[in-house]
Length: 123
Image 1 (cartoon, helix red, strand yellow):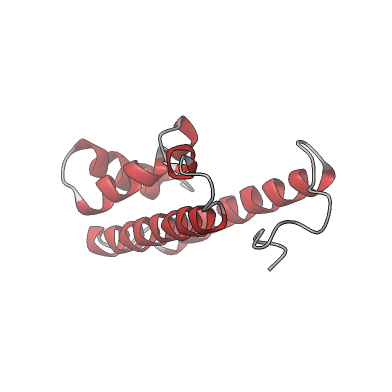
Image 2 (cartoon, rainbow, N blue to C red):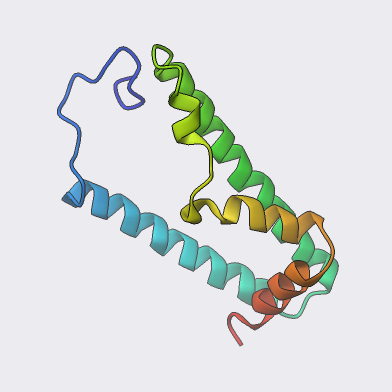
């Protein structure tokens, strides 16, 4: 429970640009690049429906993780009523939380751009 911060932290938190933070960020970036190349190669010659399926799974997964994060942070910071305002995905780095579901479940240019970039990411 100490990892999630329930009951307060018993250890000194890692700092900004510490080796722990850089290791986590680098590992997530490497994982995302690997998954993008893997799914790009695997579904390169598939029809559009299978490519849309991958987009839908990605959209549901990314938004589910964000909702779980927001709920956990709000429960953990229950004494501060402004916690939810600081956690809303209103920053540029949270753009994928809106754009991936729009590409997966919508119709139009954003979906076409996602399919084109998905198809040509490893060509």
